[in-house]
Amino acid sequence: MVKNKAAIKRFTTSLKGNYGVYLPKRFQCLHCDYAAPSNADLKKHNLTHTGERPHGCHICGRRFTLKENLKRHFNIHLKK
Ligand SMILES: [Zn+2]
Ligand SMILES: [Zn+2]
Image (tube, rainbow, N blue to C red; front, side, top):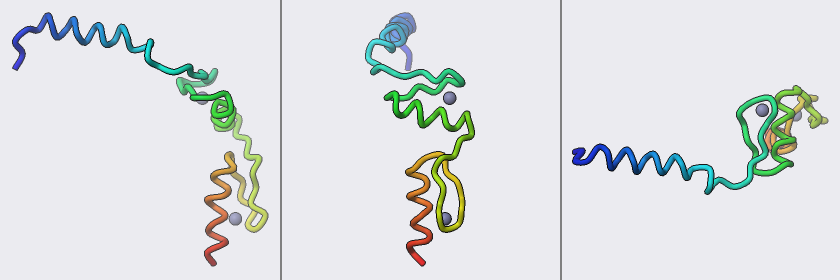
């Protein structure tokens, strides 16, 4: 039920206008649209572009971009 289209349009436009104000500081990726909440997160994200996988599993030799991923993977070996 739309009683006053103009009022709704004004409301949504003002929302759009204010959108940027409430956003926390972001670190924009140079290679894509991704914006990280911190510089460290941006560096991690950048690895997905460089294809670098600095974290290797010493049991099976699989390589991972993120240490977190290696840790998660390592649980497979621990369960056995
Ligand atoms: Zn990116
Ligand atoms: Zn492994």
